[in-house]
Image (cartoon, rainbow, N blue to C red; front, side, top):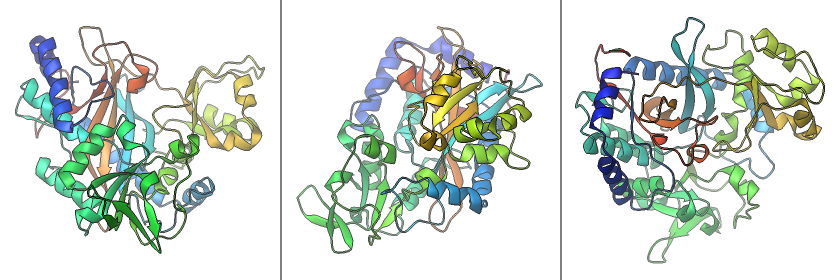
Length: 430
């Protein structure tokens, strides 16, 4: 972390400015913000962000170049959710990184997870802008990656979401969008791009086309769908859609639903065991391989310390277990016991991974003590273009997990943003 910006921010912080920040976020996003926003951004080196961004690009290339991994992931797509018309690559990608200590004692990024699904591309720009204005951040500080400015960023986002179509024929779809915590992002995006927000349950099928009704009640044929509906939530809520999701509809997907499964937590064991695996990837195996295959041996060979005992009360304190296709940290369990692992039915064990538990290093100085940061790199990948890191999103916390739902009743935690000195030689500690 860059201490001179941290020290300056903390000295000038007031609760009145923070209240103003929250009020402006609600005004500019057109809805209440249902998650906690942190009192502070973080100040990091451009070099660190570029290291993370480059790692995500490299990992994605490795996955797309691994037909066996993609085939296995495709087989893991639940029945009824394998959608026709799969695109050659995802349009959206996020990669989450923890900051840990490497063997030399230096701060280094470690992959938490990678997901080919949209994130808060709209709201995050508003958050960065309001942090900058409310707290009077130094003009040398940037937030967009790849040399983009705000205008170029929105142009690239429009190209990715809308493509070559009239915005009226493009819709952002989500399940019950008005009630989602991510609604502020939907509102910012829809207003800026001129597209409609539609509940996925309200799409109407006629012949080979899907349609929606605009504000005037007129039926509009849909040419492209900006998909924000998470398959895991559709399954958990047992939602019955008014159209067959697997049918080959005459529509383009901005964020084809299959990519939610193809690049996900499912990918981490594949990346972990690849020859010459990237150093940011933590050791990980599928639960089925751990209990019934060579997974335990693979973890130990990767340097994970595991107990010799295999009794039911054995605790794996260096591991955590994750459902492959959950979101927002749902279902993650720390310090699992062998009995808890064995309780998972054999037929479902391939749907979980065991991953080395990472020790986040508290690095952010706050009035409430040192706070941890998880940094997410957001990528855009328009049709017929290249994968581009565009922005970062930060979550601050002092608990076991970094999501805003896991740091309740605390201050100086929650959703945040990263700023870096543009083209500067400033390094952490200065």
